[in-house]
Amino acid sequence: MEYQRGQLFGYEVREYLREKWGRRCVYCGAENVPLEIEHIVPKSRGGSNRVSHLTLACRVCNQAKGNWTAEELGHPEVQAKAKGPLKDAVAVNATRSAIRNGLCAMSLEVRSWTGGRTKWNRERLGLPKTHTLDALCVGDLAGVSGWHATVLAIKALSRGQRCWTNVNAHGFPRGYSMRYNSYG
Ligand SMILES: [Zn+2]
Image (cartoon, rainbow, N blue to C red; front, top):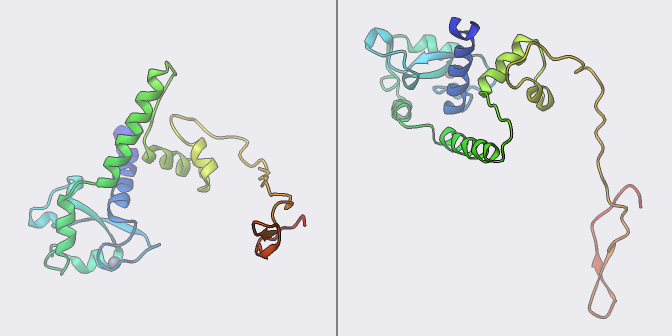
């Protein structure tokens, strides 16, 4: 139902655009600012709502652009790129299909969802963005519980008994290894 109302669909479009346009304002290059969905050719000038005609811009650039096209604003590259396919996404989708087909061929139960849905779940449930929580937010879910549990990260270190010193063919020291570690 929510998908049909457009909220999740909005996430898909926004994520697609963020991938395609590199998560920055296409006009000034600003990063880590709120980005607004922007018509490369304004609707008043015949631009459409098709996703291939949209890009992302910061609020300042979006408002400054007004009724101009990207090309008129001095950014013909934006208009050129809008026509091109999303190469990275094509590669990711092809890989995802290959993995999915491989798993299905092993008679495993396989289901898949989009990254847009993962983000939608995470924000809907008010969870911070971490790899672990994103993994828990994949797919159809009502909620995520128990995620405040402490996770212990264990890192394996060598005991440092190998080759502190390089030796030559006769067993004589030849320079010193630059490796140190806490176990000495
Ligand atoms: Zn900008």
